[in-house]
Length: 135
Length: 150
Image (cartoon, rainbow over all chains, first blue to last red; front, top):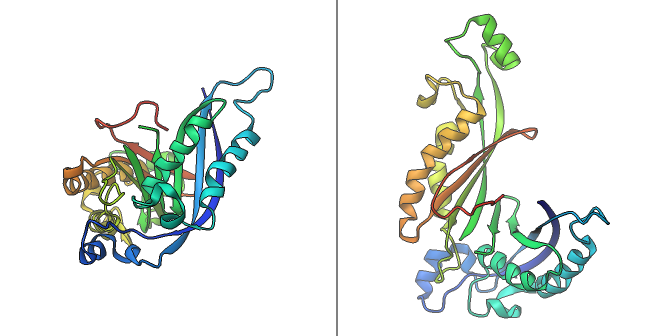
């Protein structure tokens, strides 16, 4: 089994807020991430696909296919956007790095034509990242 | 189950030396790391915790709490210290990065899992880079570990 990883970047703003909590609780739990005007990050996404090498090409999958899929499904949706306001998945749920990783998995898993989606890794900063394996 | 990794840095000095070996054997096994005056590194620590996403917050664990636990149990003990002389656990064992990585996992597991007990939080992995060319990982067994994860 071979694991192929492709990386992509997007920049977006977000804030954390739970409308079921009081403003004071929101500030306590989310701290500076609760600023309603939002703040931003340069996100890095790593998509890892597992599969076997096709003997005719020497490849697990055509990387261009993965690049285009990432661009269409993730980058166009999230790059230079305010995630809470512009990405439907985050209308009612916080765009935390955890939830972004799960959302990217959900966007890509049904559309991957070759190989099996193995892992989504999302870096919010170089010192903070989340891995999701689909379960 | 989501795996969240946070990176931390600390700088420390050490000397690799085993009292059970002769001076010559120590020099042979540990080479320049056996210099009696010691030497130091900038360590890069990765702490990975695993758990379900809390639907109320969208988070696996509060990062401020994670930072506080790592600071209290690891960084304050090791940063700008001599690992052989200042850190009690290395009185009898050689402060290789392997031993340091294992020691950090032991120091963090109980406080992290206690703080995150309500949500079933588990310490999943401790990674430690001694230099950009050397790194070590301590992967912990736990009920939620996905087989084949890597």
